[in-house]
Length: 71
Image 1 (tube, rainbow, N blue to C red):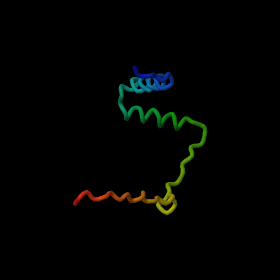
Image 2 (cartoon, rainbow, N blue to C red):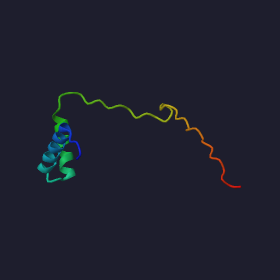
Image 3 (tube, helix red, strand yellow):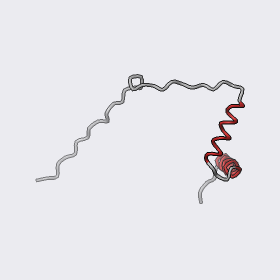
Image 4 (cartoon, rainbow, N blue to C red):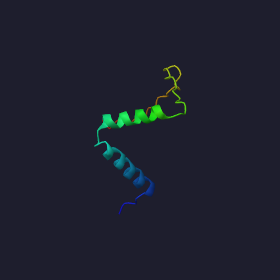
């Protein structure tokens, strides 16, 4: 038996109801969200994309040596 999270279930039900309103048409859903965004009075914050030089350095994982099984 799988445990069910009430919040996850509620979120899924809300998503299903919202998308059903638009007959699952992604373009119609996007138009609705854009319209809601345009009606919003709060400012929308957009951050500039980071360049590769601004991203933290990525270190390579350690190399693991595997012993040879050849005679």
